[in-house]
Every structure is written in C-alpha cells, then in structure tokens.
Length: 194
Image (cartoon, helix red, strand yellow):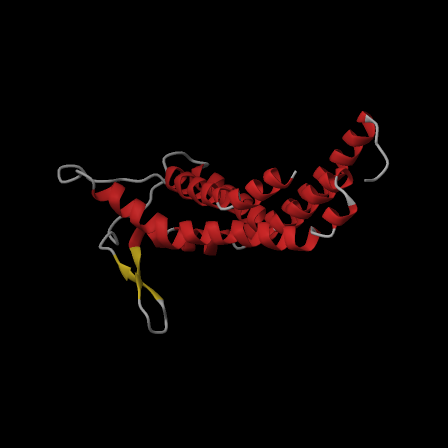
C-alpha cells in the first residue's frame, strides 16, 4: 500500500479526480450537443419500431410498430432546448465513462495492495464494456417493448400525446439505469474480494 494520506490530502485527491472527470464530460458534452439532433432522432427510434431477431445476417432488424402517426410535442418554450441539453449530457457521460471509471480506480488504488493495482486496465475495460452493453441492451431490447406496451395498455378510448421532455427523460433514465445495473457484477466482485 502507498503512504497514508491525511484527510485534507484525500479531499485534494478527490477534487483532482472529479475535475478531470468533469473536464472529460464537458468535452464530450460539447461534441454531443453539436450532434444532438441526430442523437434525438436515434432516441425516438424505439417509439416507432421494434427489434426483430434472426439467425441470418443482419441478426437484428427493426420493424415499424404502427406508432408512426405519433409525434412528440413540446409544452413549454424551452422544453426542446432542455431536451437537447439532456441528450448531450447523458451521451457525454456515456462517452466519457472510460475516463470516469479510470479516475475512480486511481482514487481507490492507493488503498489497494500492489498485486491488486495491476487490475486497472481490466477494471476500466470491463466496467466501460458492461455499462455500454447495459445501455445498448436497454435501447435495443427493453425500450421498444416497454414503450409499445405502455402506449397500447388499455388505451382504446384515449390517444397518447407525448411531451418531448417527458419522453426524453423516460428513455434516458431507463438507459442509465440499465447501464448501472450491468455494473453489478463488478461491484459484487470488488466487494467480495476485499
């Protein structure tokens, strides 16, 4: 183990790790904000299509669900702007996740033994991969079925009118939640190995 740090030195180290992570998120956010319209179109894909699986190439195709007449509306003047900001922020978090996981590891590593510190590369690769797999699993598998179920559940006499802000929040929360859930194996291994 490295030399013991005082409480204020730990806080200084934590601040440095947070600043580096925030800089990575900010750079990713700016890039994603530039492409936020394309990301929004991609995010609305589960609203209009559902995946179909095949044993032949391509293995996954998307079929129109019949919700194509459904359009998103915004109910407040700034709702469309906030939607683009949220999409850029969450996309920026996902893109900068390797840097964030690396900084988490570097903050925790001084408390580890030398033989445990060699796992930094596998830790960053596994945590990033699991987070991305969880996010993709939610986007490709869960969201289309969840949205289709919720829009057709006992709605014979009512017509859905979705706010773009509510739809975006729903999708992004689902995606982040599944990304976090897929991190459980890493958390379990980390907790059981100490």
